[in-house]
Image (cartoon, rainbow, N blue to C red; front, top):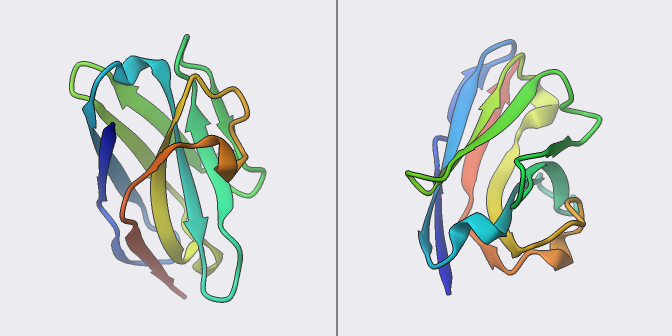
Length: 124
């Protein structure tokens, strides 16, 4: 069993930055791929970024590539999403997720555990 608590959302102006965090608790956390998804009102949940369970490889949605970075601190059992150059289109509830040895980073169904979500609002 893994518990995830995501935090760090807020209101920011376009062009600004935010850093989200996801604190994990449970066993064998280094064996989980960690990901971020987001869901805007009236839209489906979409993949944002992921960091692999093994060697730390990363993957990003095209819409955030070059603006967002993802990292994990296994010693602290925490994952981060640094979001720069935010636009109103980034407004959504952001969820962290954990998938046991998941290699299909962008598929929500491949993640076993989810955080409660944190709201990010970008004003124009």
